[in-house]
Image (cartoon, rainbow, N blue to C red; front, side, top):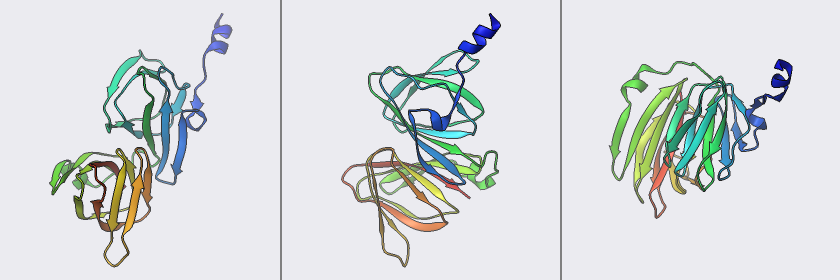
Length: 219
């Protein structure tokens, strides 16, 4: 009986072998996946070896079945970002009538410290035509939710190291670095933009609709 039970128990797959998780970016800081689960479908049982952040794209309702725990129903809002400690396996079941989409970003430098001032700076900064909400700092990373009205700018600021931009809405942005030609950042919800170095710049929403994106910064 025990042997039969063991044989019938599912074995968690590595996250890269889970069909709904599509690897979009990998470097020494992050491994980012664009995730999509069809309506009323479920992922395979898969293992998260690292702490991670996920950003929900569209309002969603899922059942989170963590191995060894009771299932939990979770309602998620468009653009909602959450930090999840790693080292567990689970199945995500989509309870809604539309695809469950998110960007899952593994933080590969688990447990790295972050500057104390990052904790002190948490909260909402009101910009001219927008907001910057510093949500949390974990594992050497800081996560902010940026929202800009058409024509508004996130004024001149410095990223202390590499950073990852995740589009929540469709984006049409212009990045301006002193002494350089402006660059465009365009993308659909879920698009990723990685900047590998420290940079000081201004970001302007050149689109006709409000822009929202998540920034994950490393020091």
